[in-house]
Amino acid sequence: MDFLAACCHPAGAVQTALVYHVARKKVPHVSADGAATCAPAAPNAVKLEAFIFDVYAYADAAAVAVLEGERAADFAPVKNAEGTGWGPGGDRGGAASSALLKIDPRVLPQVRHVIP
Image 1 (cartoon, helix red, strand yellow):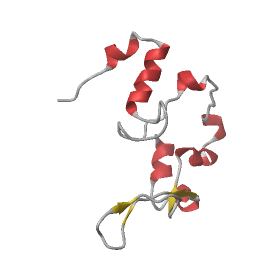
Image 2 (cartoon, rainbow, N blue to C red):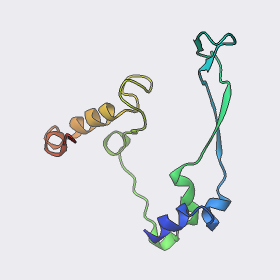
Image 3 (cartoon, rainbow, N blue to C red):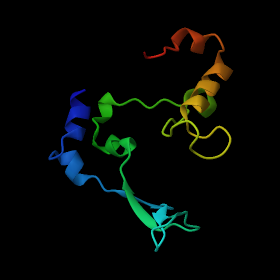
Image 4 (cartoon, rainbow, N blue to C red):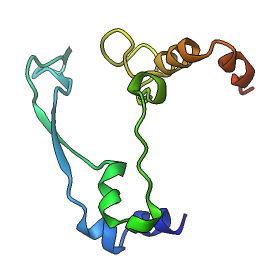
């Protein structure tokens, strides 16, 4: 946890050394007359992104372990709300739940919890 705290400190050596990744995005905008929202056909904005894996270079090599696994069994990105994202499976919570059920259908019903 000390490593993560050091990486996240805004004035720390890691944060001041990290570089941003450029992502060109299609960002909806208001029409010139202000009457409608326009969905651009091509990217019209630049987003600067930072990724957690960028801090690996700053970790103590003796304290880091790399594991290799089967992607379908070990990874399901969850970064968008239901009904968003792209393509079949997408990157939503439901897609991650479906992937978990494919591995072992007994697991998810045991861990699912509805927050009141």
